[in-house]
Amino acid sequence: MTERLIQSIERAADVLELFLTSSEELSLKEMSDRLGLSKSTVHGIIKTLEYRGYLKQNPNNLKYKLGLKLFELGNKVSDQFDLSKLARPIIKELVDDLKETVHLVVFERGEVIYVEKMEGPQAIRIYSQVGKKAPIHCTGVGKSILAFQDEEEMERLLSNTELKPYTEFTMTDKEEIKKHLQTIREQGYATDDEEIELGLKCVAAPIFDHHGKAIAAISCAAPKFRMGDERQTEIIRRIKEAAAMISRNMGYQQKPAHV
Amino acid sequence: MTERLIQSIERAADVLELFLTSSEELSLKEMSDRLGLSKSTVHGIIKTLEYRGYLKQNPNNLKYKLGLKLFELGNKVSDQFDLSKLARPIIKELVDDLKETVHLVVFERGEVIYVEKMEGPQAIRIYSQVGKKAPIHCTGVGKSILAFQDEEEMERLLSNTELKPYTEFTMTDKEEIKKHLQTIREQGYATDDEEIELGLKCVAAPIFDHHGKAIAAISCAAPKFRMGDERQTEIIRRIKEAAAMISRNMGYQQKPAHV
DNA sequence: GAACATAATTCGATAATGTCGAATAGAAAG
DNA sequence: CTTTCTATTCGACATTATCGAATTATGTTC
Image (cartoon, rainbow over all chains, first blue to last red; front, side, top):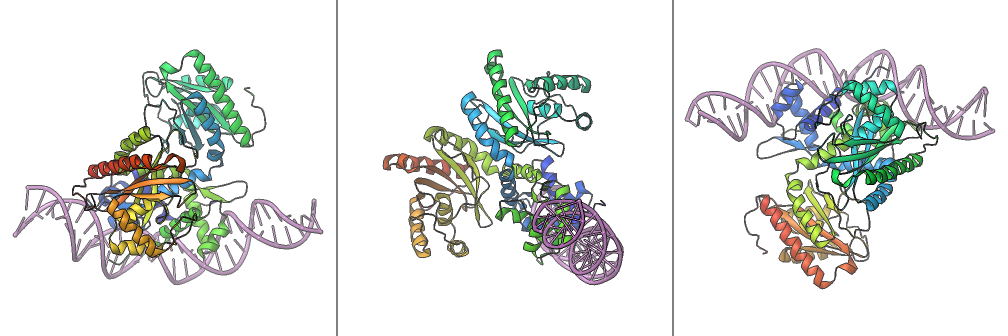
């Protein structure tokens, strides 16, 4: 298959994706510089995107930011995820019972992305990470998905990722992580013990599609002081149960080897 | 300014926006038919969008749906809304005190779109409408924004909108609505009494930017049985207060005529 | 399981369209 | 008011997106 991709659409995508890495407004010049394209080219792209509501120009400084049309489309996406729809009531029940925050992530194109979040009543932070990428080496969800990929994919993912240390407990050695993933595979769940944020503990389990591929995960996050051994055991049970339930609803039949 | 828009980017936008009106997956043929373009043209567009993560092909039926990249971008949008960031803590306080669901909408390009939602503990429906359009003639937020546009804009909006009846209480007569908007202007808030959904009452107030233009609104929604006269008066007070606070933080100075 | 029907994908030729560099207009800074 | 940015427009040209036809894949019926 000779990819016959359309240049100007790719460039439009390049423009939009500039905003993923910089949280501020961008000027035409900044964009054309960063993309290595002429100003007039980028200008044409930008004006088209603006006309369609994908970008919005700030009249004060003439800079651009992402437009509402993307918001509309973005919110339509999760509607189209059978997974989200299907998982939502199960997550709701988890939150109601455990009174802690539960996340749903999906794994696509080598990225783990938060798609759903329900906060427990005791939630402290209101800041959402929905729509953001989860690091694969230091989150429960990332590790539980990683652990159930085939050897090749796992290797590829670990190599393509900067194993950035978030806290003093973050594992940054590839071999150490791979050994740890083995344990996760055996247990059927992953934990994150202050590996991404001090004081935060997480329990996560993978969700399988009908092919048996780990395509998503759910996790329960709580401050460390509310995640003692006994309670953690209870949460592990519930998270594994919920993940298995969602997997089953996704058409996953076969009992996994690790159960 | 002769618009020099880029055709293939516009067509890519056309493709994506097909998904806003149909909630199912779409096949290549459906899309090329609906757009009146050749299959190969649309195919090129689709494959580019898929390659970049804006579309995703379902391997079972070869149909396409929106991709995760849009989800990522969409969630980045609200980060860039100063408004959302700024309003969030104020909304949070409202929800905590009133124990009811509060919405934030913004008005852009002639559309009123839900951008933020916080549910009270007694919320019944978990289904979110974030990212969706609010009808302007039968929602508190829609009406409160409408009421504070200039005559010309108001007329234009009312004419371009199908005044669809959602319940037996929906106002569908343009003149009746315009008269009602006058009252809203005088009061500084709008209510929705089962106009969009039976059993649901709403109180909303507009938010003004530094030019004094109504660019957003917040509302509090509750089942009718929890919105008696006395409680409604309290909610009106709180919603107006919150909207005024947000407006002030947006740089709105001048006291509006209606206060 | 073969034959048909329908849809997806690829290919080649062509004209249209997106691209660039230069010119102009518009802000901001000195 | 001049200078220096940056945003925007314009004209010419070659690239590139487009279409229709051909091919491959899928799934449907008997």
